[in-house]
Length: 496
Image 1 (spheres, helix red, strand yellow):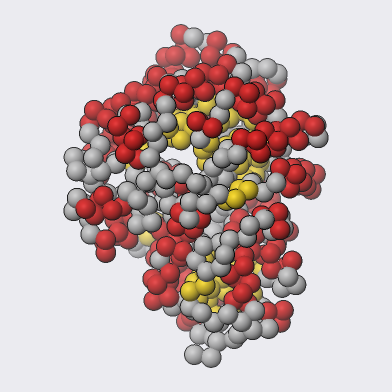
Image 2 (cartoon, one colour; image 1 turned 120 degrees about the vertical axis):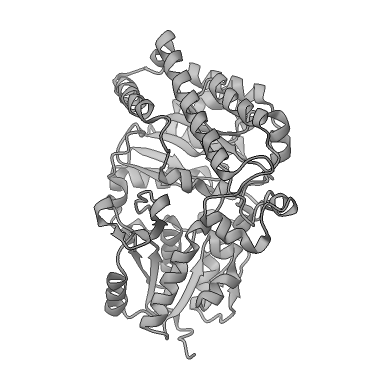
C-alpha cells in the first residue's frame, strides 16, 4: 500500500486521544482526561518545526455517552470521527494507547481510519502498544512506537519506515518542551470541581519518568525499563509558574511513577516553591515511596504546599510484601503516616487484593493494617496481572490462565487466584471498604482532634467540612457495588 513517507514539515498530522467503552455490566463513566503523552509529542514536534493537531475522541459529560446493544462508549460516534478525518485530510494519524483493558477500542479506531482512507499512515504508541506491538500491527496499524515516544515519532515523520520503532531514551528531560496545552481546550479538562481537591482548577504534572524498583505487579518497565530520569528542579518550577500564571492553576498533582527517588531533588523543588513564594497546593495521587521519606523532607513538603500524600502500601502482610518486592518496614510507614498527620497533611494508602498465593488471613491482615496505620483514606484494588509485569508468570505457572488468554482475562476484570474466585476477591474488596470507612468514622467521632490538627487556616477548615460531607456520602453507599473509573484504571503502576 502506497502510504506517505518523509517530508515531515509538509505532512498533516493528527493525534487522537481515544474514547473508552465498557460492557453494560461493567460500565462506569470515564471522563476524558488530559492527553499528556500527546501534548508532549506535539510540543516536541513543534520544537523541530513540525505542526500537528490533537483531537479528543472522549466526552466530558455522561449524557454524551453512546449506548449500543452490548456496550456503552464514553466517546464520540464513528460518524463524528469520520467527519474529523474528512475535514482534516491527514497524512498521518497518531493514536495513544494507555490501557490494555481498552484494547478493542484501539482496534476499532484503527479499523475506522483504514476504512475511511487506507492511505492514511497510522502510528500507535503508549503503554499498551509498547507491550503488544505485533497485535497493533495485526489490527491494521502501519507502525508502532515502543517506549518513549518523542524521538521515535519524530523519526517516523522524517521517513523511518520500520514497523516497530524504538529509540534510546532522551537523557536530559529538560530538552523536552512543556506539554503543548495550547493545542487543546484545557478548560474542558480542568474545570471539573473535583471535591477531593483543595483548590480549583487543578492539573497534573510529570516531573520524572520511570521507576528503578522491582515491584512484581508493576508495568512501568513495559515502557521505562526500570530506569528513572528526572527533570531539573528549576525546569519543574518554571512549568508550575507558567501554568499558575497562564491558566490560574492553584493545585498540582504529581503524576510520576516515583517522584522521590532522589530526595535531594525533591527537597530542592520544595525549596524553590518556598523561595519563589508560590501560593500553590500539591499532592502525590500516584503514590510516593514511604521508605524515601523522613521528618525533614515531610516538613519541607508541607511548607511548600503539599497537603496530601498517597503511599503505596499495597499489602499489610510482611510475607506478601516480600513476594511483591516491597520488603520495606511497615513500622517506618506507620511513623511516616503519624508524622504527616501530625503536621496537618492528609494521608492515603493504596492496597491490592488478589496476589496469586494470598490467603484469607493475609488479605485480612492488609485490611487491618489499613485501618490501624492511621491514614485518612484507603483504596483497595483487585490485582490485574498484566503480561508486562513479573507477577504474570506466577498466574501462568499455576495454571490460573494461559498466556494467550491474558487479554480476555484483563478485559473481564482480572483473574482468580489459587484460593479465591474473582467474585470472592471482589467480596473481600467490598468488605475492606466497609470496614475501613466504619473504622474511620468511629475514630473521628471519638477523637475529633485527628481532624482538628489538619486545620491551620480557613482554607483547611473548609476542606475538612467538605471531606466530612463526602465521608457521609461514601458511608451511605458502603456495602454496595463499588464502581469508579479508578477501580478499573488504577494508574500505570498497576497495569496498562
